[in-house]
Image (cartoon, rainbow, N blue to C red):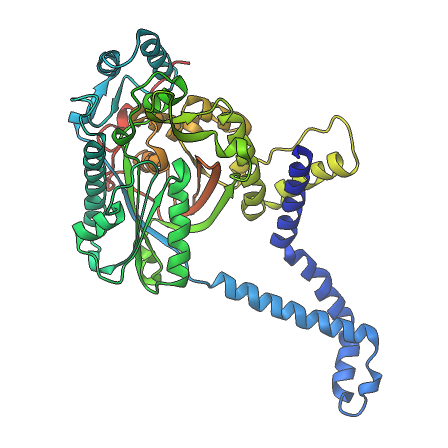
Length: 488
């Protein structure tokens, strides 16, 4: 099965490569048409009475020329398709009352966990890459009397805080919003959180409302992909509002299964509201243009499907089990995703080296030839990698051959905010903007990993320089304190 999957990936990459470089076939076609031009001209002059003079090479050349013209018209049509713009976004900026030190968290969990598991909790947190202080909801009265009400309170706080900030930044009226998408994994009340937004902001009756649940930390990119499809197909000249968050307090695990305690150690409070538009008139004021979304799902594999799994422990306490296989499964999903993404974004030189190495290893069976890892720094200026934990970021840095500066937004987001699930990539983009690193034309790669198991990519291009002096976001007031040195 492993060999089959590798072969399938290889075939997929080659086919994607050929499709993305189809123009290479046009050059010889046009050359052939040019060499046959005298015959074509003569034939055209005599075609009324001498159709029998058409020879096979001439007919073939005319057919190829017509095919080329149709292909170029098709490409031109695609290039002028409706574009999707990211008008702006707002990350929830928690109040200081939600800021807790490690020692406060330790004292809190000591009251509900055994000494052995309290020690385990401390060890994980200290090795997680998070800072001494992170934001959490509901720790004043822990464990909460009602996890449901606490979860709803956290969701309302994050959603209203982020959406209020976004609408203030964009000056968009709620009545102009045609699509609402909320993605949240493990807290899904009735009515849905998307209905909560419709009610709070009095959105119009024909709004398309979606609530994506149980889709993990990569669901933010899934929400963007869904919004893109709706804006391209169902809504003309409209806005899509996306809310990406997780409600941590609704899913605190108070038990003795260490595989379920990991979620308590890593996840923290956070969320982001995003506004997309398909109006060409919004291009001038939008920050980014969406270039690609690409989704990879390994749920057909049982091992991948169960590596992040919500279930009860032996005492009937509900929690989210995080498997020891997570890192290897994430690596396999990443490989599949970048195999499909590479042909869309990499320059010709990188594609050629990858294909040449692949042929040497798989076709010519040459020994000693290592797999070629494309240099994605030639395709992107910035990387926003889901801040799932220090081990995840270490593996991504090594596998993609990224520098410490490339990884800085991800590591600093993990340090200050912890794992905020699907919204972490937006905190990273906000970090880049606060640092003044986003320039016109820069390409940003967002990578998310999540239960299922999924790896999803979103590619953006900056439409203008983001001036940190004019930008206010969740990092603005503290950005001069970063980056910080993180102990290994």
